[in-house]
Image 1 (cartoon, helix red, strand yellow):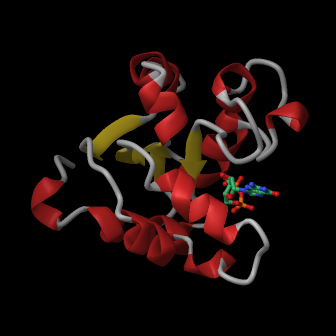
Image 2 (image 1 turned 120 degrees about the horizontal axis):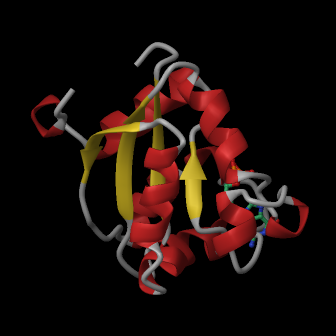
Length: 140
Ligand code: GDP
Protein backbone atom coordinates (compact mmCIF):
# COMPACT_ATOMS: atom_id res chain seq x y z
CA UNK A 1 0.00 0.00 0.00
CA UNK A 2 2.94 2.34 -0.65
CA UNK A 3 1.84 5.97 -0.35
CA UNK A 4 -1.32 5.71 -2.45
CA UNK A 5 -3.46 3.83 0.06
CA UNK A 6 -4.81 4.51 3.51
CA UNK A 7 -7.18 2.84 5.91
CA UNK A 8 -10.21 4.30 7.67
CA UNK A 9 -13.03 3.12 9.87
CA UNK A 10 -16.34 4.85 10.34
CA UNK A 11 -16.58 4.49 14.11
CA UNK A 12 -19.61 3.36 16.18
CA UNK A 13 -20.83 6.90 16.95
CA UNK A 14 -20.99 7.95 13.28
CA UNK A 15 -22.28 4.57 12.04
CA UNK A 16 -24.98 4.52 14.75
CA UNK A 17 -26.07 8.09 13.98
CA UNK A 18 -26.61 7.16 10.32
CA UNK A 19 -23.75 9.34 9.08
CA UNK A 20 -21.87 6.67 7.09
CA UNK A 21 -23.33 7.73 3.74
CA UNK A 22 -22.61 11.43 4.26
CA UNK A 23 -19.04 10.67 5.37
CA UNK A 24 -18.39 8.35 2.41
CA UNK A 25 -19.72 11.08 0.09
CA UNK A 26 -17.17 13.56 1.49
CA UNK A 27 -14.42 10.95 1.09
CA UNK A 28 -15.31 10.18 -2.54
CA UNK A 29 -15.75 13.87 -3.40
CA UNK A 30 -12.23 14.45 -2.05
CA UNK A 31 -10.93 12.04 -4.70
CA UNK A 32 -10.49 8.80 -2.74
CA UNK A 33 -11.48 5.50 -4.38
CA UNK A 34 -12.92 2.66 -2.31
CA UNK A 35 -10.72 -0.45 -2.52
CA UNK A 36 -12.43 -2.56 0.17
CA UNK A 37 -15.31 -1.96 2.57
CA UNK A 38 -17.62 -3.90 4.87
CA UNK A 39 -19.83 -3.48 7.90
CA UNK A 40 -18.61 -5.41 10.93
CA UNK A 41 -18.44 -5.28 14.73
CA UNK A 42 -15.29 -5.64 16.83
CA UNK A 43 -15.15 -7.69 20.00
CA UNK A 44 -13.43 -5.89 22.92
CA UNK A 45 -10.45 -8.23 22.37
CA UNK A 46 -10.14 -7.33 18.68
CA UNK A 47 -10.49 -3.62 19.48
CA UNK A 48 -7.71 -4.10 22.04
CA UNK A 49 -5.52 -5.68 19.38
CA UNK A 50 -6.19 -2.95 16.84
CA UNK A 51 -5.30 -0.22 19.36
CA UNK A 52 -2.48 -2.16 21.08
CA UNK A 53 -0.10 0.75 20.46
CA UNK A 54 -2.22 2.76 22.95
CA UNK A 55 -2.29 0.04 25.64
CA UNK A 56 -0.35 2.19 28.14
CA UNK A 57 -2.57 5.25 27.64
CA UNK A 58 -5.14 6.11 30.34
CA UNK A 59 -8.00 6.05 27.80
CA UNK A 60 -7.19 2.56 26.41
CA UNK A 61 -9.93 0.64 28.28
CA UNK A 62 -12.57 3.24 27.43
CA UNK A 63 -11.42 3.29 23.79
CA UNK A 64 -11.68 -0.52 23.48
CA UNK A 65 -15.16 -0.49 25.08
CA UNK A 66 -16.30 2.30 22.77
CA UNK A 67 -14.86 0.74 19.59
CA UNK A 68 -16.65 -2.54 20.35
CA UNK A 69 -19.93 -0.86 21.35
CA UNK A 70 -21.54 -1.03 17.90
CA UNK A 71 -21.03 -1.67 14.20
CA UNK A 72 -18.17 -0.04 12.29
CA UNK A 73 -17.32 0.36 8.62
CA UNK A 74 -13.65 -0.42 7.85
CA UNK A 75 -12.54 0.90 4.43
CA UNK A 76 -9.32 0.80 2.38
CA UNK A 77 -8.94 3.93 0.24
CA UNK A 78 -6.74 4.83 -2.72
CA UNK A 79 -5.49 8.25 -3.84
CA UNK A 80 -2.12 9.89 -4.45
CA UNK A 81 -0.60 10.94 -1.12
CA UNK A 82 -3.45 9.06 0.58
CA UNK A 83 -2.31 9.03 4.21
CA UNK A 84 -1.49 12.73 4.45
CA UNK A 85 -4.47 13.92 2.38
CA UNK A 86 -6.88 11.78 4.40
CA UNK A 87 -5.55 13.08 7.74
CA UNK A 88 -6.22 16.60 6.41
CA UNK A 89 -9.75 15.63 5.36
CA UNK A 90 -10.64 14.21 8.79
CA UNK A 91 -9.06 16.93 10.96
CA UNK A 92 -7.58 16.83 14.47
CA UNK A 93 -8.26 14.00 16.94
CA UNK A 94 -10.26 16.31 19.19
CA UNK A 95 -13.17 17.85 17.21
CA UNK A 96 -12.77 21.01 19.29
CA UNK A 97 -9.38 21.48 17.56
CA UNK A 98 -10.44 20.23 14.10
CA UNK A 99 -10.48 22.70 11.20
CA UNK A 100 -13.82 23.88 9.80
CA UNK A 101 -15.17 21.60 7.07
CA UNK A 102 -13.28 18.51 8.21
CA UNK A 103 -15.12 15.24 8.82
CA UNK A 104 -14.41 15.26 12.55
CA UNK A 105 -15.46 18.90 12.90
CA UNK A 106 -18.78 18.08 11.26
CA UNK A 107 -19.55 14.61 12.68
CA UNK A 108 -17.47 13.91 15.84
CA UNK A 109 -19.11 14.34 19.23
CA UNK A 110 -16.02 14.03 21.50
CA UNK A 111 -12.27 13.32 21.45
CA UNK A 112 -13.14 9.60 21.81
CA UNK A 113 -16.28 9.40 19.66
CA UNK A 114 -14.57 11.20 16.79
CA UNK A 115 -16.45 9.65 13.84
CA UNK A 116 -13.54 8.22 11.83
CA UNK A 117 -10.12 6.62 12.04
CA UNK A 118 -7.29 7.56 9.68
CA UNK A 119 -3.93 5.77 9.42
CA UNK A 120 -0.94 7.88 10.43
CA UNK A 121 1.68 6.32 8.11
CA UNK A 122 1.96 4.16 4.98
CA UNK A 123 3.25 1.32 7.16
CA UNK A 124 0.28 1.48 9.54
CA UNK A 125 -2.14 1.83 6.61
CA UNK A 126 -0.92 -1.52 5.30
CA UNK A 127 -1.01 -3.19 8.73
CA UNK A 128 -4.50 -1.85 9.50
CA UNK A 129 -5.91 -2.76 6.07
CA UNK A 130 -4.56 -6.29 6.48
CA UNK A 131 -6.14 -6.48 9.96
CA UNK A 132 -9.61 -6.36 8.38
CA UNK A 133 -9.31 -7.50 4.74
CA UNK A 134 -7.88 -10.40 2.77
CA UNK A 135 -6.64 -9.81 -0.79
CA UNK A 136 -9.88 -11.33 -2.14
CA UNK A 137 -11.95 -8.59 -0.50
CA UNK A 138 -10.19 -5.80 -2.43
CA UNK A 139 -11.51 -4.60 -5.77
CA UNK A 140 -8.31 -2.73 -6.75
P1 GDP B 1 -5.94 9.68 15.84
O1 GDP B 1 -4.73 9.18 15.10
O2 GDP B 1 -6.30 11.10 15.48
O3 GDP B 1 -7.14 8.75 15.72
O4 GDP B 1 -5.58 9.74 17.40
P2 GDP B 1 -4.75 8.75 18.35
O5 GDP B 1 -4.03 7.69 17.54
O6 GDP B 1 -3.93 9.60 19.26
O7 GDP B 1 -5.87 8.05 19.25
C1 GDP B 1 -6.63 6.96 18.77
C2 GDP B 1 -8.07 7.16 19.17
O8 GDP B 1 -8.17 7.12 20.60
C3 GDP B 1 -8.67 8.53 18.81
O9 GDP B 1 -9.10 8.60 17.47
C4 GDP B 1 -9.82 8.63 19.80
O10 GDP B 1 -10.95 7.83 19.39
C5 GDP B 1 -9.18 8.01 21.05
N1 GDP B 1 -8.55 9.03 21.92
C6 GDP B 1 -7.42 9.75 21.65
N2 GDP B 1 -7.12 10.58 22.67
C7 GDP B 1 -8.08 10.36 23.62
C8 GDP B 1 -8.31 10.90 24.93
O11 GDP B 1 -7.57 11.75 25.42
N3 GDP B 1 -9.41 10.41 25.61
C9 GDP B 1 -10.24 9.47 25.07
N4 GDP B 1 -11.30 9.05 25.80
N5 GDP B 1 -10.04 8.94 23.85
C10 GDP B 1 -8.99 9.38 23.14
